[in-house]
Length: 435
Image (cartoon, rainbow, N blue to C red; front, top):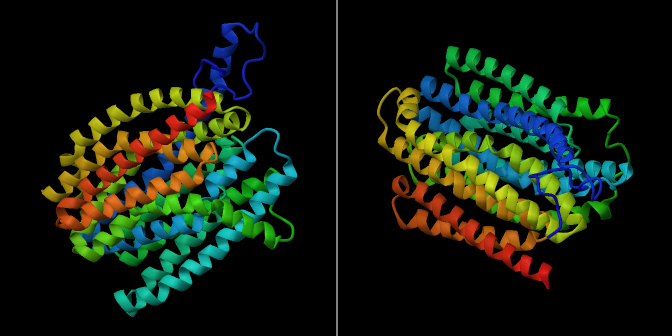
């Protein structure tokens, strides 16, 4: 089996057949630094939604926090439509060392244009439905959600990750999130306003994207040039399988919360949203491995399928070593966290938090097998098919039982389906590589 013996070492491989073992350990130094920088970046990224949940839960109460949860979850779900799978597709296109600078800028320019068009479409389609269903008096919440989506559409952090500019990404993300936490505490803790809470969320999204573009300009990477509409259409077509899979995956998270708000009351949606935020914060501890791993698997798979699969096996071991302790810690801490946030015992929130913690290792392995590996190997359509099956399982469990009881189990069942079916797809790919 080709490939290196050290997890996530440079995909270009060792310098030669006679390279000493010390050389491999020397290469671990820069890798460890990049993983650490991505860890700080993701900690800052996911700390803000968690602080947001805690501050809003304590100051707005369970019912009003349910309203905030609906709009935040809806914006997050629509964000998957706006992102359209371009972050994964763009990373795969610009990560290989042989990718020409002109090609990278062309990809960046057209991805930004496509995401802005999708943002306009999402706002135009959802605004009338929200005004009819929620009422015109909630228009400030809708505008704040649209502003959040605009920041999401302009986000270019994927390009910095793909080029492994992890230190710049770490600094800007940490600064923006810390300022966002300060704004959130000053605004919501003092005024206890749903509008201020949602605008704090939106401003963090807009400011983060603005900082990333400042960095890209300093690096000399600007998406300047004409839009090639034929190429834009081809990008949308090639990423369509990824977005279908991502949208089905988002149905289990933000989409599920928004759906839960339709099936149950705001209090149930608020309890489920807290459980989801805790799970996402737990997953943030593993994102550095996922993000840098996808970059390296994409580069390895570009040269040799067997090298990518070998790297994937090492990632699987590392994923399990991280995920299992995180899940156990989350289950143990669930009662204390819900007691602190809601200032009292909320059994529904405790059970949901424990179930979501249990999902962490299942989701992590499924993510590694699915979007991380299948997309890297060019199996986007298989990934989309698997996610579609998982969404059907999620909906079946959710509607078969009362939503207060079924949401957590529906997520766990769907994540298990993704893990198993993605593993079977990779086993088939491995057999093809050996043939």
